[in-house]
Amino acid sequence: MRLWSLHPKYLDPQGLVALWRETLLAQAVLRGETRGYRHHPQLQRFQAQTDPEGAIGAYLRAVLAEARDRGYGFDGSKIRSARECAPIEVSTGQIMHEWRHLLQKLAARSPTVHEKWQDIEIPETHPLFSPVPGDVAPWEKHQEAP
Image (tube, rainbow, N blue to C red; front, side, top):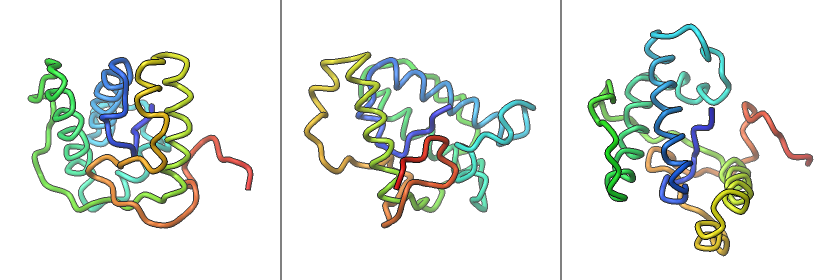
C-alpha cells in the first residue's frame, strides 16, 4: 500500500488506478470493515487525525478529481465520507523520499511520464497535505541512511 503525499497528477495511469484502489482499501480499514492492514504504517497519519474517515475521504476526493480530469470513470460513490478535513502536515524529507521513489518507478514503467516530470525539483503535494521542514517520516519502511 502506498498512499502518496505527492500530488496525484504525477502518477502514470497504472499508478493512479493503484492509488485509487489502495486508498479505497485504506478507507475500509479505517472504517473497521476489514481485518487486514489495520496496522499498516501508511495509515498512521490518517489514524492520528481527529476524524480518520474524513481525512481518507478528503484524500480520495482529490484522487477522484485527478481521475476525472484525465477522463477516467472512477466511481465517486465509493467515497464514504464527505466531511472536510484540516490539512495534514508532511515533512519535506518525506516528500523528497517519495519523489525519488516515484521517479524510479516511472523510469522503469512509464518512461514518457518520467521524462515529463524528471526535472521537477520540488514536487507539489497531494492537496490534503501541507509541507513542513523535516526528515523522512518514521513510519516509512525504507529509511535512507543519514
